[in-house]
Image (cartoon, rainbow, N blue to C red; front, side, top):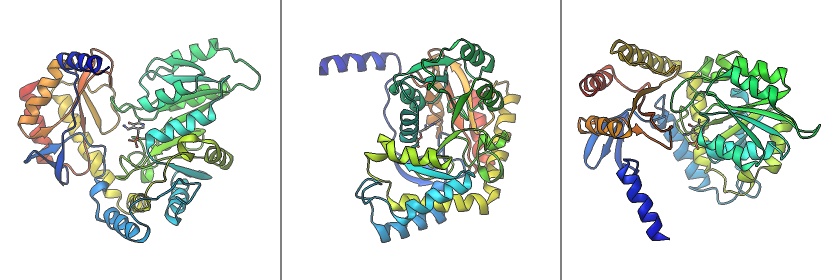
Length: 386
Ligand code: PMP
């Protein structure tokens, strides 16, 4: 068995696809220290810099002192503290929903919600570029799965029109990222919601990269599209713009109660530490009290995009701080990423299987914490490399 694994790894290495984490020994804003050298990171999803915000750190320390480092049990046993409870109430208020439920990660939330709601005779429609966790969740349901072309509502409709439900009780679900993690573009939600109405389907939207970034107070892409109440199930994570950790789902009371009672990835795992919940509660407060952070994020995003476009790069319809620069060839992408690395710039090469073959790219994420000088430094090096 080990011999086979080694052969596969050798093959991955030959194709430039072998992965190894870079180990960070210190952090200062968007700068990270790796093997004794500082780099400017352009690959964090900490869009507002909240992971380093004093309010989050203090809240986490205080709660940890009170409740301990770990929760010690699953939520439905002795793992629920007042902070878990408070955070769920705050998320529900933030998302303007009846209630919300926490999971230990965004990945677990996608798995936990979709495998619980979708039954054997139901039908799922998925965007072809949905995040791996949505794809894995859809596959686990073992139900009929239809993949529509990326953000192509016309293709989705043609598949909906052809689909045949198995029984009068069957339900149809349309599942999509709000903001796509590798392209930074937004799902055509108005069209999707319209089609859901026409074909009696339910919508499930993953706001991982929308929460904290879009709409008033950062409510998300659904809200920015004027659809906050029209999407049936909204999933999110605190691990990106909220600078913390933990997935969540929000929606109608009966929906949340059902998931709390039935979802295996919710029931059979240890609760998040109370300190993490406290940090997310603090993050939601900062979203409301420091709107300047979101303004800085968007100023930086607009600046970077404008300059890249002036340099002649197409940005693949990105509407978000995720800025893809398509290179295509994997080895070339890795070589450019390595050259930037040598100049103290951390811009990862995104390769298959994260993106389809032939679509390797540099993926730049801009945050509120980047300075003009840091962005100009990257633009200058990109000009030399590309
Ligand atoms: N959904 C999307 C669209 C994502 O990009 C990610 C994280 N890469 C997740 C879900 C998973 O979230 P988490 O990291 O909190 O597990």
